[in-house]
Amino acid sequence: MFDSLSERLTQTLRGITGKARLTEENVSAALRDVRMALLEADVALPVVKDFIDTVKRRALGSVVDLSLNPGEAFVKIVHEELVRVMGEANDALDLNTKPPAIILMAGLQGAGKTTTVAKLARFLKERHKKKVAVVSADVYRPAAITQLQTLAAEVGAYFIASSGDQQPLDIARRAVKEAGTQFADVLLVDTAGRLAIDADMMAEIQLLQAELEPVETLFVVDAMTGQDAANTAKAFNDALNLTGVVLAKADGDARGGAALSVRAITGKPIKFLGMGEKTDALEPFYPDRLASRILGMGDVLSLIEEAERKVDKQKAQKLARKLQKGKRFDLEDFRDQLHQMANMGGMGSLMEKLPGMNQLPPGAQAQVDDGMFTKMAVIIDSMTSHERRFPDVINGSRKQRIARGSGTQVPDVNRVLKQHKQMQKMMKKVTRKGGMQKMMRGLQGMRTPGGPSGMSR
Image (cartoon, rainbow, N blue to C red; front, side, top):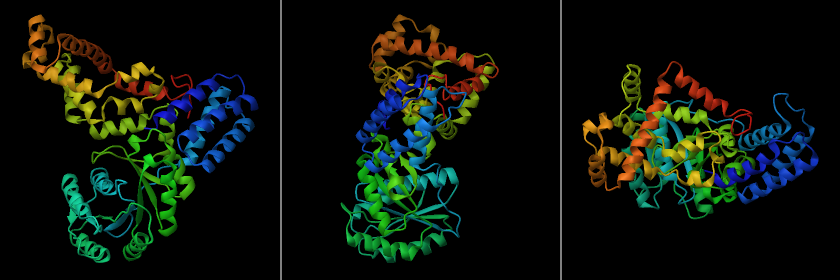
């Protein structure tokens, strides 16, 4: 996410980090590169101008914190201004109303609106323990109703039926009543999208908003459309009382123009990021965490939260007890760890959240391939139960059999065994007294001056 912007900014800021003092000359030189990076990321020009002017004024007029060198102080200012532009803090959904709390979803066709409805339903169900009902008022695209029905079944939301021969207002009124009889906490209303903004669409959704009086009206927009996303959001905000924006397909946005422009142009907060096609790929939008990711500081808080949600706690506790008893970390344990890593989005997702990872050489980053971990799991599955528990018995002939069974080569089997040995050593260190706490403190320390990123919050 935002790879090109992150790479450009970290390169630029690395050049000023070691400066003994901030001068108009070196600040202006750095900001010229920052300006180009933001424009190439398709950030709206007024936003870029305000950002550059504010950073320059603060950098040249600031009293440097004694714990930071001047270059680090400059990076800190850039981080704080990125946070300001994107909205200061996370704006949570306001569900403090008599159930069902109604959330109206708006957006253009193809932006990912119906999928986002399913993602939000799952988010509210799993993280907020809400009973969620969903309904489609999109009578112009019959596939939209069928799509929402399928997704509702997948995420465990209550689906309220509708059809193309009904009027959107009638659907909405009936949905509110049915959601009430089902004791739903939240009702998500999917509305019709169009290929472009038009008067008829706006009039229809204005009527729906007036009728439903939703607690939230969220605009779903494709993040990959850059500042056009912000401009489209503004057009909708002029016609509707939007309460927030959802940036869909943010995982495919290497630039970041939408995230850095939406709040400034619309005045409305970004509430969520769509981070993939799966129904669990929805993240609350935290401006400070995203700013840290953009500047290569990582996002350890999100990583820890993700681990809390997605790591199988029973398996983790079982492994911890096993290791604490002095038993060895075997290949079955290693395979479980590979599956856990896949559940957390693979190595790419993990590396994005670890501090300093964007400073790895391009060659090293290119070698991180989630397919490699799938292949490793297949190789382990091709072993016997005895071989997985006692890897030392795997000799040359066994390696050849395992390679044939997994469709790989003997060197691939050797690599798995080597990786397992390295993981085994690491697990020994982690299970020693305070090992895990020390590891997490180390990750947090990487966010501060003197860590690999050389940057501070």
